[in-house]
Image (spheres, rainbow, N blue to C red):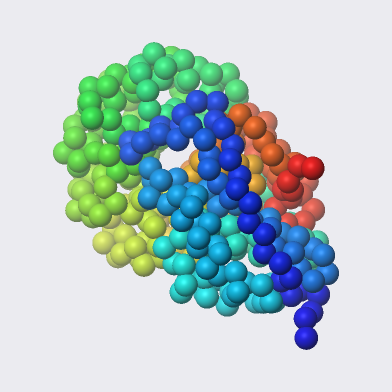
Length: 360
């Protein structure tokens, strides 16, 4: 017998959003966010919304593969009770474990529908530790001139922390870009993100060269490939800069290994890598092991970024916040979500769920 909280329907739509300019990382660039919008409707008419944001250059996931994964679990989702969100998430993990963005979209929609129905904002559901965050903004791959221009534009927006994509095939270019950025915004903390595009030796050389220029990064994120555990350990031991895992931290099992081996100082949690529920497990491992927390994302719209903001603010204790990709999108097909002023993201006004709905 269906209850008011029974999931009546799952709807999946393509969500293609152009970017102002290509978003480049060491593994490639993306000029359109080819995402998916997931809608769950409960028997009482309540709707919850989720977003899948696959990024092929990051981990090989595509819009087509995420769509196929969502269709593969339709029969497991429709007819389930949204109150049983953890068993549903466990079933998703068993069936489409490799499709992180699809799991994220469904779990976001599940929790959005549940908390909308009981009139609770998600940052409260996750723990209520806070309702504000301060995000950085990213300078993607490009020329020295583009880097310095972007740095000035970021500071003019009122954003204090700058993240810089590194890992080009030309180490001299990485250094020149970072020196140029530091020259025009010397007081801005810098997070360097290699997206696995470097070797440990070249990353150590870059850190040494930055020291000679009196540049002291706040964080070095995933400089080496995801499977280069020894490289991460070397950089954590000898780099002189806190090191974060991103691509390596793709699962709770991997994060447990990172903790046991003391391979990094920080873990970048991205809900899009493994879903919301496994991300809760990752956060718990990090807290128990004394690893600092970072929240990030793929090329996501306001919907997915708002979900990540609720997650991080509600849990609390995130030392690094990288929730900037809506600023790179040329269109916003949603209403609601967090309010942004400079780098400050505010959630306190949201009355239920993540607070985001499709326009029209």
